[in-house]
Image (tube, rainbow over all chains, first blue to last red; front, side, top):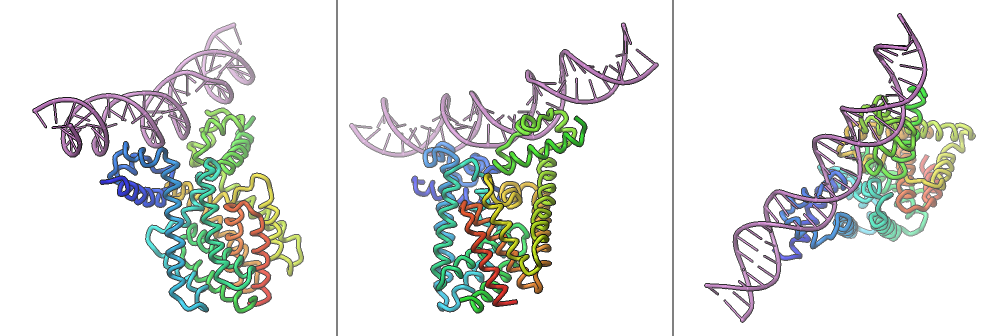
Length: 179
Length: 179
DNA sequence: CCAATCAGAGAACGTTCGTTCTCCACGATA
DNA sequence: TATCGTGGAGAACGAACGTTCTCTGATTGG
């Protein structure tokens, strides 16, 4: 097993564990056990736990936005806003859905780790940029962004995926009423 | 100092510390130091840390919603939706604003502590009920709820209170376009 | 075949933290 | 005054965790 594979297996294990149970509830030894990478190697690849957390968040940022963008790009341009909420709806229904990894990490570590806060900020800024690009005017874009964030957090806390439907309806109402 | 005052001082200290730095980053000894209540008494009032966390969240739930409702009730009925966002705007600007205590707690402990998750769910359900009662139809209420949650989380992560303004505009657009 | 390097397994270390225990001072009561 | 219960201060305890160290075995290059 070369270094690249070790990194991949570590990030895979970190993502499953940290997302499911939170960062502080997972020990490095558990990351070792799930990844199958020795502790020594783990600390060669990531000198500290925070580095692993940041790397996990960075990879998730990239993949999350790519997955959303790919899904939306496959639709006709007039359907793209509703496609965002279709994608969210799917996500909310996945077993093990536990909300936004970045919001959760900020809740846990935002006050302690400036690095984690910065990654979360970059992620949210990228999501907002992307959503602003989907609609014609700025105000509708900001509203879309707020509806998306609101749906994620509501679905996460309540455990009810209906938030996606409500957000889609609200976005549609905004689109017909205000644009 | 009687028991009631001890409880109050403990909850005051817990609220400041837990909200500012997160639950897991604060030790019981620090709660003792800030509250001025001895460790022995602390464990008489709250048999474990989780009890203190739950009590802190319950009190905050009550006060938060009361504060919002009082502010809104002082306005004319046609201004009440915008008043919600005025109140949020104020909150976001307060020094030490660190987002929603319940979302943060769920991110930290939701996977570990069913009690904390339940309190957060009750809080969000109460907020939603309250907001649904502010507007005539159900759809507009759901949209209002999502905009509020989205604004809170966006302001928290980005650190920019502009989310309140964007949400207010979106709610106004919905009100004129869709109700 | 030997020396040197590296990797893995897991013990070990030091710290932090939740919780409990010990010790002592004090106030009330017979 | 002697005693009892209460409360505070802080030591103590046991567990968990991040991180490092040790030992051992395998591999590689000469």
